Image (cartoon, rainbow, N blue to C red; front, side):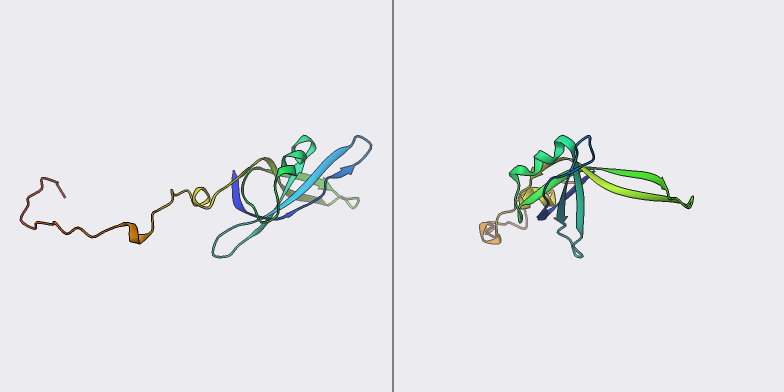
Length: 124
């Protein structure tokens, strides 16, 4: 899966536990009618992928959805979801929408040599 948008926040790398587990958070704001602020976690060696990106930059982030189960001390089972990034790349505005750039309207000139009596053999 992929998320495209503008970088809103890049967190510092955090280290947890005696084994040195590393995590870094990225927040991407989507470009749609109702923009969403999506927090993506990068873990272990993937934390370093964020070093060359900055707030305000357009990006495309490849993600995996992760889920886990936890039983609290009272015996109740809880479920948690996370979004984990594994690749990030810069995205241009044209690429972000999936459409190639279009020339401005001024670049198109109306046809002035149109002959209504010419017959074409198109079936539609």
